[in-house]
Image (cartoon, rainbow, N blue to C red; front, side, top):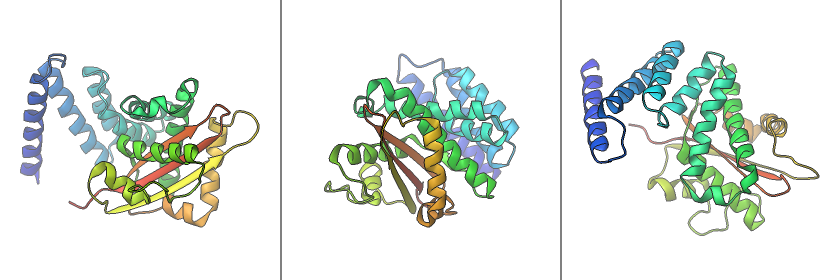
Length: 258
């Protein structure tokens, strides 16, 4: 096992060297390699339930290579395990913000509500993991690609005037279809929760998002999804309108067994 891990790390170092050389705007090769090694060490520490050590490695990776996304999902988990809610939420927000920046969804939500969306998506992810942790279940790694799937479904429900797991769009009818359209394969396991809230006044705020999470826990189907022991990753996507009404989708997945 140790030899296999060592080979994996060597391959990773070679890969990041090639990536670094291919971009004139890339950081120094030494920093790229150092950050990649720190990331792997942080992930390993977290899986070995050494959250404090994971925070040290992952935070150092972000210092060595500022703006690099891969440490952020793991930092969110490590900070949450160590009880640092503010730092955990900040890391969850980095993942949510990146999924906005790297897709067209930034243009699909009201521009003046983008930070509220990021804040509420991050809080939802934190609440999901906090609920699972308090029940002795595995933490779910936030995944920006799953967030894109979730947000696209929320936007579609808003724009097409329906509320359902079932989409009227050909090729995107089910949550499995939506996953496969992005990834090109079927996941080993996938569950999905959807919610909407509308009414008088501005509704997209942390208090209402927390209330939505609590409502999920009161409904057997949604609760079963949140407490599934078959999932490993999650994506949260919110759509809103100028009135502050919101549509929320949670996608919880295990990709494929290795």
